[in-house]
Length: 240
Image (cartoon, rainbow, N blue to C red):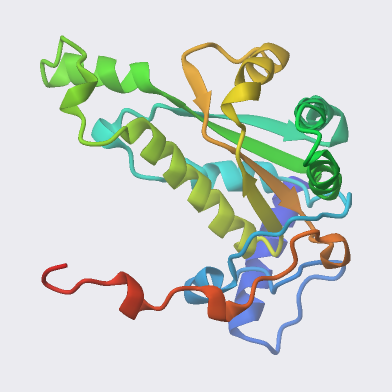
């Protein structure tokens, strides 16, 4: 069944390039499946509300395969993924967030509304980073046996995990779905580790809710495209 869906998905990709061929019968997507890469980049945005509609078979596996193609410092690959597939697996995560919202009374109502909008998402992927894997790798291959973090210009373990998250976000668009990346605050990291059995050396860099967007329930709404900074504001050609 999954193999047949995979074949139909590639037929859908061809149909995007050749509009005379329709998408497979029953395909539901907010975008045409198999979008050209420049369109994937243009269409990527954060969605903050989801329906509970199940995802097509094999979606999580395809997203994770894409994530695993990211660059990695020293090819250390010190990242992992906690996958919460379906409402039952994800429920404890949302409970942690609800409990945290109760601790900030002045914002509790808004925080709970945001969680309620995100929580129907049928898939959540949490990328995690492990610093020790990088320190071990460079101690073995470069002789950095002191494991001094000052040798590192920036913490590449978090950067590599961030690369995997971005590949997931782009692949979500290619799947015809929507996603939202949101943080797991330090104050709830211990509760997160305890509930899901995550070892101490692994740090979540955030979580990605994935599903079919529900724009009518989105508490944030769609930002105006004019709010994005222009390249003139961002680029310093030749010198600052």
